[in-house]
Image 1: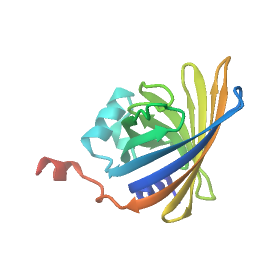
Image 2 (image 1 turned 120 degrees about the vertical axis):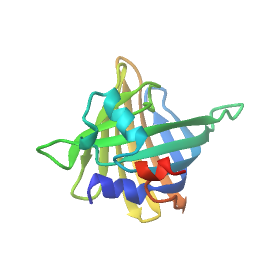
Image 3 (image 1 turned 30 degrees about the horizontal axis):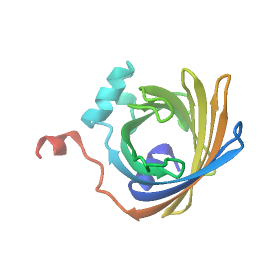
Image 4 (image 1 turned 90 degrees about the vertical axis):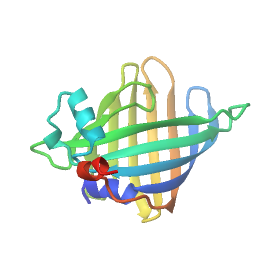
Length: 187
């Protein structure tokens, strides 16, 4: 499986349950989210705009995905909603097609645009590595079955705490096929 196939297989509506462990505080917490992943074609306006923002030729982008989430964490006494969305664009390395940059419109750990690295393993697992200004994040995602996706992640804040988490994501439905620029213009 390549990264484009991984994105295509990820398209849809998902229910996610996450268990996180804050290692420094010796504390665990659980959370739940609804996640929607929509495929975007390589020529979609959002993909082109993100490539241009990072000074990357849009012709190098494989595809894109719009990811939106809406969830809660159990430690939030008022059950504050954690909502957000971002666009992801994989840009493969010329000499290593299963590795490359992953452009993000908005980072998860820090709310700013960020470009990380991806590695698509021979086992079908996708590893995402992001060095933020104040922390390091590494996620590994894989499909246990077509409608069950698993994710492990570590987050290390420089000079501070570390967190590890495990998520299980269950597909609730499939979204539409990727939008092409000419399709969007006719709507």
